[in-house]
Image 1 (cartoon, rainbow, N blue to C red):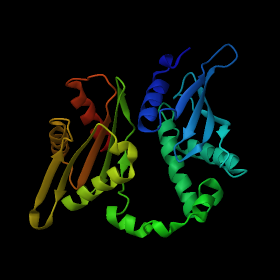
Image 2 (image 1 turned 90 degrees about the vertical axis):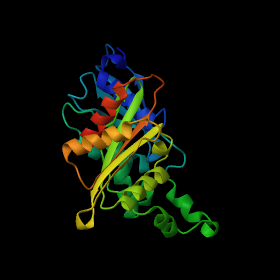
Image 3 (image 1 turned 120 degrees about the horizontal axis):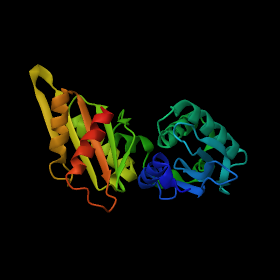
Image 4 (image 1 turned 180 degrees about the horizontal axis):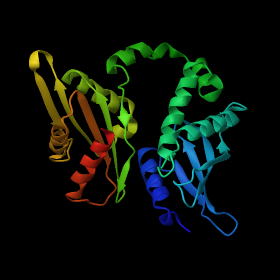
Length: 273
């Protein structure tokens, strides 16, 4: 059996490996007479030195995947950190899984957030780079606070599940905004901090904002995908959505989609809203 016989897993592999590194999620062995599940490896983008061994049932996503343990652990990972990460990933999976809904992308994102939270609490063993960072000479590096001031605070993005169509991946995110300047700063923050988004083929944006004294602001940007921004803005008008911005990111997969791409872009935007 190949992943083609599990469309959900195939789509997630394509989406995840397009958004993250190309080897983030891969199948080690398909179901066989001795096993009814796909054995997969899952490299954690938040901790690329650690790869998790994942068992995905044939009827996934109706049945949840299982975390078997670590597939590989880099030499730079502190002793015992691998087991801590396995426990953390299992806990996160139990929270994000919903029967019938693909969950591996959400698992990666929530694991990243959990690791960041652990780092904020100074649980240094979860990040193999922490000890090295403490030993580095920071005299030539700009203060972190200055960098944060340059790009502004982290936008409160709500991210929809990615959509894959003929190897192109579409990912929509929305955030509340109160001014055009804030919307522009959120785009700058996204492109400055998310390397995948910065390298994407298109980042299509649109926003509608209520201003003071009855003023309203509406704008969009195709980012090279002619008329796509205007279509997303029109969708927002039809839905009567205000004080929100949308960014639909597309990674081109090498196959032309024709006019169908606009349907997919709008569908991704609608899912995020």
